[in-house]
Length: 158
Image: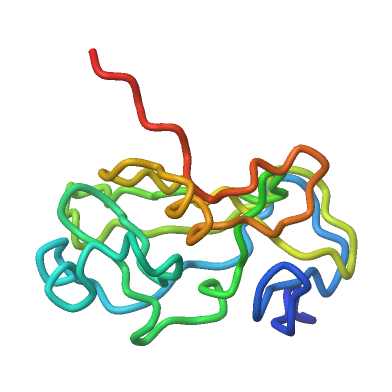
């Protein structure tokens, strides 16, 4: 079976992942892989990461983070997009073990061969979203309604 996705340089940012064939809506494309860390281990290694604008960390649940910088695969190269063609889906372990929860990237619409895969990173930081912070986390997806930042609005307090 030919590969459905390939990695190459991206016009959005650095490397990207692209459709090697036409992909139908609802296709599970790749698992986001890497070393499993607790949030505390992640913070000890990288700090909160708010001031870098770059991370290969994916929060899986309240307990664990996947660090794709270590033992990661090409899923780490999928760029953020404001009008994404994919989404990240967390599959919880049937036995309730949070260490076994997994993340998959799935298409949310038909994707044409050669099109870059994107998903909304959904980054919400616990610090003010200043102009400087929005510049650090700038989005370059090029979508007609690009928000200009990968940062998402903070959730309203209840």
